[in-house]
Structure formats: C-alpha cells, structure tokens
Amino acid sequence: MNTEEQEKAILEIVRAKFEKTGGNNGNAFGDFDHILNIAIPDRNAFLERMAAEKKIRIMNGPNFRMVTLPKNL
Image 1 (spheres, rainbow, N blue to C red):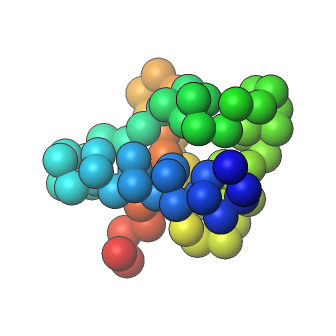
Image 2: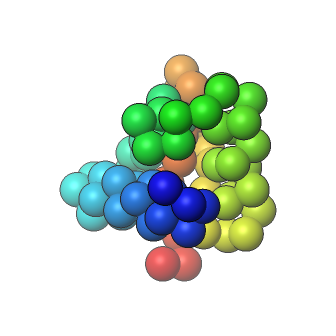
Image 3: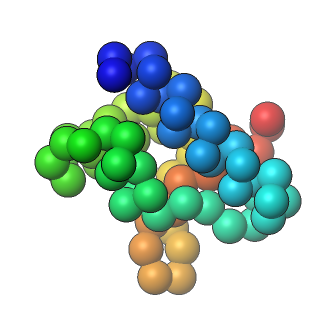
C-alpha cells in the first residue's frame, strides 16, 4: 500500500467515527496500526505529518491523544 492509499484508508476510518459521534470523539493512534504496519515512532510521525498538512487533527483526550477531522470539514 502506498502513502496515498494509506492516507485514504486512515481518512475513511476517521470520517466514519467523526460522523458517528458528531466529532465529539476521535480515534486512538493504535486504530491505524493495521493499515500502516510500521514502528510506533514512524506511525506517530506519519499521523503528525497528516495533521501538519491539515488532513486530520490531533487532540489531547483525557487518557491519550486522539485523531479526528479538522473542524472546518
């Protein structure tokens, strides 16, 4: 799976959770391990790069960091 396919798969998961919860909850970083299948530091860097490109938003939850869609979508 190339980078574009990985990003598309991640966005599908995040979008489904966003629509289900109305944007109130996000996905844990571990929810994408089966797609990325890379080391944890690399996974985190991949997700942080997507956040820097404004494709996703990383927010601090009560117990861990969560991934959601930016509010402007």
